[in-house]
Image (cartoon, rainbow, N blue to C red; front, top):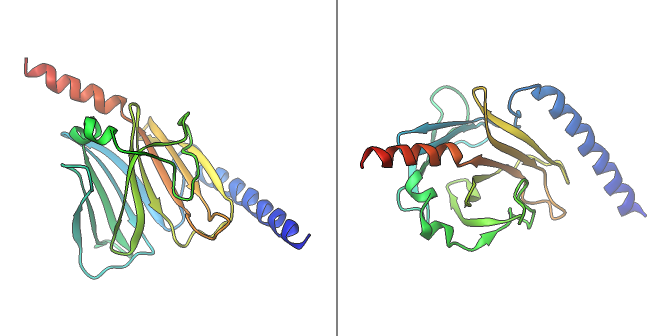
Length: 210
């Protein structure tokens, strides 16, 4: 009885939080607690996703290769403009459209949650850890490329919410925010980007060669 009441109370809290996020975001992108961003740009042959993690402090920066992604990497550096650290994903279009990457084992989100907006609920993925940020993951499918970023201080139990994500005035995908699961783990956000515009740019580049 006590457990049932506790779960109901937590559900009410999550619903109230959902209302708060819906109102605070308005027509723009979602405001993620402890995160300034993410921001998305398509530069040359790379998709660049950057953000400030306000609760992550490091003394020195570093660049990491992404496992299984031959030309992609992650940068984690101290934020020179304020508190926290700057996390940057630079993902090569060559990797996104690589048959090697697409042959990776399909995975759900951490904790077994289904990927929102994907019929199968899973995509080929690789998980990895860098300094102070455990269990990040890259996902790639025929139409969607996604990044999972853990939020260790986002404690809302059972919270789950998805909203369209825009770059400027153009919708480029969805962003989903998750609170802790029943084990008190796996809070984070998932940024799912349509690869359509990247694919079109790649085709245009290839057409210039012939």
